[in-house]
Image (cartoon, rainbow, N blue to C red; front, side, top):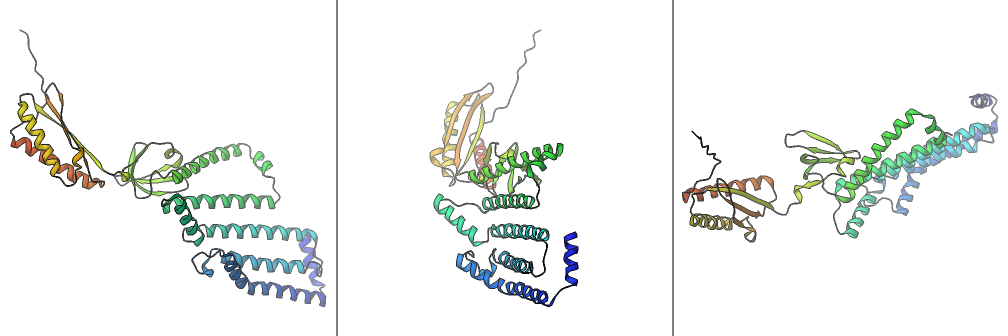
Length: 359
């Protein structure tokens, strides 16, 4: 504060030469302000940082402009250092402020570049798809970008703390119990971050998939830095930490190539074996006539002789992945099986119990 007061006091006894120096410094700042757009434009064009978008729409354009404006102000102050006899302590603070603002501008520019619409990200995604011969989902890209942005902010925060003269090790040690709490919270955050990375790389599901995990099932709505949101059949939304999902068994119903139909019918023990064979043949014929049934997967077998009747197990694979369509065809097949039994005059068995009473 004393250095600032001395600097203000020196301005009261300002000379003509110093006034000229101040004017020159202001001109330097104005020139950099005017040239900031042009310099930013040509740097982006030369380094090809704009991708497919226009240069002025590039994520680097505004941060570069801000840098040149800041540089102009900084050089103006450095130019006035000798003419105005600015104290070295004040210059030290100015240097610190300059570096902190520069760190903020750099971090902001890098994070603006890390959006799925920016050309640099589009190019990277295309290269990854070409090398791995697979399509990377937009959701995976968004999650990766969020992780990178967080890392950039953390690095920027550490650099700013160091510029302010704080010792990070001493600061953490001085937190005491608070440090332990922060460490434990960081562990949970790290677990969720790692889980998010696992989901990103392994890609067991994507937004829109219907999944079953951790005794829950539903449609994946979003995958964020911390958790994955799933909308359940009763229209509630679950937010499950990524650390739990990364170690869970996941069933992704959207990855089905076909669905399995299976049912068991139990005929009465009085049913003649000839009738059993006729029913088996008619069920096989009925399934073969269905367009969505794979004929080579049809299996109608006399499976077991039970206490109450004869068990026939019917198995077939259907060329259907949509769940509602599967239910419709399953219902149709069940109706047709019941019609076959009715047509042949065969009844289904039901559980009975005979009790003998001894006199």
